Length: 84
Image (tube, rainbow, N blue to C red; front, side):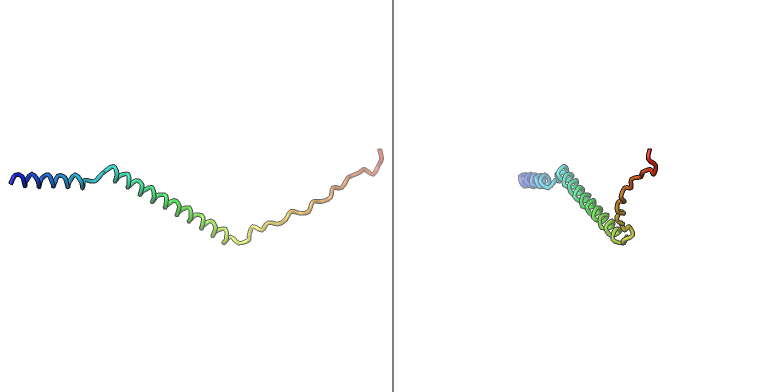
């Protein structure tokens, strides 16, 4: 009976050793998941800002109409009417 009892205890101990979670690996995996989610949130935020800015520019209409510059005037030489 002691052989069966020892065998059962060793099997239970081995099962516990194999099924014990690897804390450092799990923590690293959670950090990678968090980094991926944070990156996805930042990309989504940047896309939302770009869409909002584009919509704002389109909704603004043509209020800021750029007019062409006037044609340059010819330079007129000023001469005095009296000779020196």
